Image 1 (tube, rainbow, N blue to C red):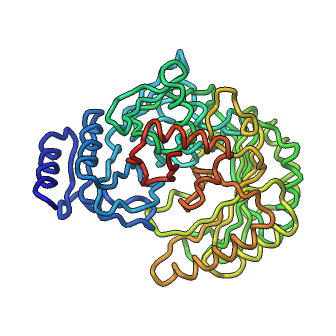
Image 2 (cartoon, one colour; image 1 turned 60 degrees about the vertical axis):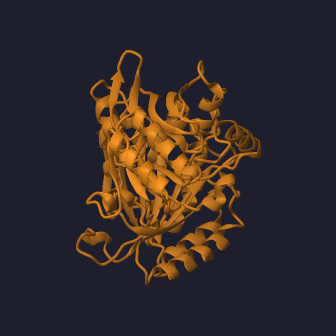
Image 3 (spheres, rainbow, N blue to C red; image 1 turned 90 degrees about the vertical axis):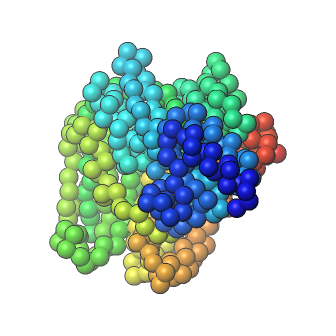
Length: 456
């Protein structure tokens, strides 16, 4: 580092209200590593911002040093390593404040969904949160946001009422329908391309209890169930959200005995409304599977819906592939069953029905989400290491090729781990508009360590 660079880093450390971690410091490895360990960044420093002033200082230092700047809270969405650059961590900005009268919540740029769900539940309200309480509110919302309430109420991005943002030039601005409507539009699905979001104000909804659960069926019933799922989706009520997941489970004690060492199909579902209505709505799909191996459905507090998923796995290397589909064809089902049963790296394939409120783009809505898809797919090869990673990548390439004839070509930003496909997350018109706004708000391309949208 040059003498000028050393002076800049020393000044940043001396004036930061938060904490600066340099290589060799005890907190450096803890703060530099994201949840998804495919990325192993070696930054010049990690700066944990304690307030807006810190964010501005860190941004200014990155520009003075002319090094990459990566912004992250929980690190779930990390895509590219900020080697030799600065990581700006918003993890300390975790304040949450609910206004029960206006049915809104103000959440700091580093808040996680578990904190927001718990605070809202005290007032009989719920956010359009993700399925894991450990995921960051900001990254999830800026990428679109798809959760258990989305078919009823829409994308989390479209529940964003206003945001406080530090833009590339260091300005601290408010984006909202009456403040900076252009930036507000871009934030609702445009990812982290337009600034550092230090606070979000989100709409809350009157949901306290839901009908939900998960059941597991033997893999031998999977083809019939997936075929039925494609037909069931056409009449699925907007209050019901369903997900079918093909799983190849290992022969380990942690897996319940009925599911151990076999392929199964899990049906997860949440209904926003009376339990008897939810049971009636879900019954036609479940009847196709016959007697389940394990699981069940019943009333539960909305705050307990993260329990429907497997426990959030620890930080790991994994490979994913995602696509969108208009229908569930027999050929597609054959591909999915082949790949998950192959005994290779892909052990999880999730198929989710969209529709409902997701199919209706609000007049003032942002660029979040596809406009021509009924189903999404995520294939996951989890818990990889140096030895298994090449085989996992080879299987994912094969799977992607086999899926291509059935897919729309689009993707959903929150599900995407390949930064080379970012443009496919938007309609051509929305992507062009985002590129124009990138030129306005970040002409020097400061915010590029993400799902990058280049300036027009």
